Amino acid sequence: MVLGASEIQKYIKDGVKARFGKDGKQIYPTDLKECRYVFSFIGADGTDKCEYFYPLISNIPDDFEIEGVSVDMSLDKVFQKFHGAVLKKECRNTGEAIEIQPQEENMFVIKPKIVYIGVTQEVVNMPLNLVAKPIPRVTCFSSGLTIDRGLVNPNFYGPLKFGIYNKSQYPILIERGFRIITVTFEHIVGSSNAYVGFHQEGNKISTNGNFAPPR
Image 1 (cartoon, helix red, strand yellow):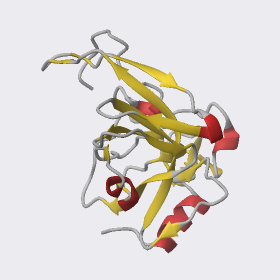
Image 2 (cartoon, one colour):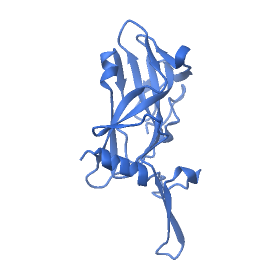
Image 3 (cartoon, rainbow, N blue to C red):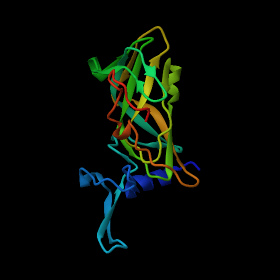
Image 4 (tube, rainbow, N blue to C red):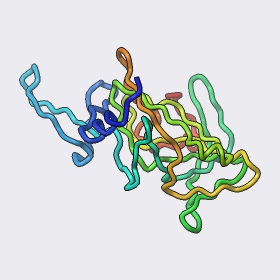
């Protein structure tokens, strides 16, 4: 079931229980200011315990809005891909990615036939009962841009990354802060497995020419 605007706003305001480690326990926040609130209680073993609740979406820009049932997210950083990739069953090498800087008027230049990786300004904190589906905004593909992104799994936290490819024969200029993808959130039926993989926190753009495990 897709979350409506009121539910999304509720999860942003009240927070969600998120950020679990491989041991299944919540990770202690590096900064408690990131939390909406902390719930303290006495556990069954008699010890003090805490649960941490984070906004579903944080680092929100001033022009943030929910259109229908989807949340628009804005472009913050762009990386250009270099070299080929090697994708094996037991490991992968996704080449190198170098951050490019915006030019005049804070515009990123997206050249034709080159693969880029975009990163959102907004940060998501996915609870165990939600999955997110990002898709490109209509403006992007009507301008000749292909935007690719997979599902955002339960327990992922960090900014979202997505592929950018200019299919046209002309450069395309994108201003930093442009709302480039739109995201819906859906409830999961049954239990889920928490994501704890390579891309957690959203701070890894590529394997930088090295081989890494597939997850």
